[in-house]
Structure formats: structure tokens, C-alpha cells
Length: 276
Ligand SMILES: [Zn+2]
Image 1 (cartoon, rainbow, N blue to C red):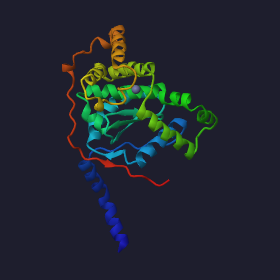
Image 2: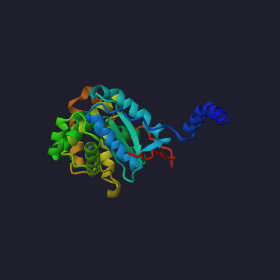
Image 3: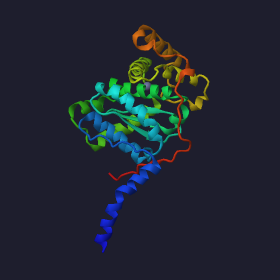
Image 4: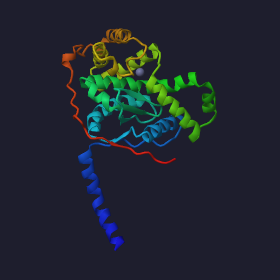
């Protein structure tokens, strides 16, 4: 009898899953297997965020994020050896951050904060550029010379060291202290990627300009750090002027933006901690 029931369940399981996916919306991507130090660090950060219950497993918000993330990946992927994967996380601050290994984390709050598609695309292009430039790894090398000497010596770090670095990295990514040059460099590469992906690269400029009028508590940390937004705007505008073949066709007026529609109060299901 139990066997029969099991078979019956197996028959019904796929349609049931299908139904769940309709009700709950699109799913988080599956993490990339660990093959080197970058994917290992990426996996360790993923594990930490998952165990804190922050990673959104399924939500209609993924359907909003997905087409933009895919268009950006199509352009950016040739510049980085591991697949870019975009995860939604629940945090009260509008924010986005990238880790080695290709994972990009986008807070649900950011989706509600941006005013148009170009502002979100600009933010994602900026984060992907940090990964292409290997900014997180470079910064860890500066800050943690001892661990990184071990990093250089070992192909894989082992669970303890990888986890320790991951915890420190999450703290760093949230407190964010990239230099102005590193930020501007990610802005510029990001604007190239956005332009190639068909998103108006003025989106990032509009986002910076929005912040000047926003409640300081609401300003995403990724953009509210030391590098003055004004300087970053000037650097971007100079880049646009110097490369008219790429940028002249884009309209600097935010009124030309593509409206961004995000489902209000979208349900969110979370990945659950796994024992380790
Ligand atoms: Zn940045």
C-alpha cells in the first residue's frame, strides 16, 4: 500500500511543482559548483546569506529582475569565466553587491526604490563590473594579506577559512569602502555594458541625481559611500562625451526612461539554512 501511494505522489509531483511556480513566481538560480577560489568564496558567501535566511528562493520579483539580468549577462558574460547569477535578498536597505564567482545580490528594497528600468539596469551593470574587475578579491588582498597568502598557496581554502573570509566579505560589502577610482571605474565599465545591452546608460546618472533629493536613510549604501556622487556623475558624463559613437544615441532626459513596474507586496519564500 505505501508503495502505491508513493507512485501516486510521483505522478502528481511535477504538476504540483508547476502550480507552485505559477503561484509563487520565478525561482532563485542554482549556485555554481565550486571549481576554484572565486567560486569557493562565492559559495561561502551564498551559504552565509542562506543560513541567515536572507536569500529569496521564489517570488514574482524574480520575473521583474530576470529579463534585465539576462540582457546584461549576455553582454558581460564574455568578460568573466563564471556564469553571472542574480539572487534576490531581503534587506531593509536598497542595495546590491557582487561576490567573486559571478553571484550578484539585489535587495528587494532596491526594486521598490528605483524609478525606472534604466536605474536598476545601471546598478546591475555597475555590480557586474566590480566582478569583472575582481574588485572584491583585490580589496581582500589589501586588507587580509595573511589569509590571502594562504589563498595563494592553496587551490581551495577549506570550509573554515572560506567561511571566515565570507563572513568578513559580507561585512565589507555592506560597509563598502571602495575607493573613488574603483567606483568610477565600475561606473564606466557598467555604462559600456548597459549601452551594449540596450539600456540607456544615463540610468546610473539619474539614480545619483535622485539621491540628492532622497531621505539620507534611504540612499543605497552602494552609492552613498565616500566617492562623491557629483564626481562620479562628472566622470560618467565625460566618458559619454568622449565616446559619442556609443553614447550619443542615448537620451539624457529621465523623462525618456522606461517605466519600471514591480508587483506591490510580492510574496517571498526564503531558502532555509542547511546544517553544516
Ligand atoms: Zn560599487
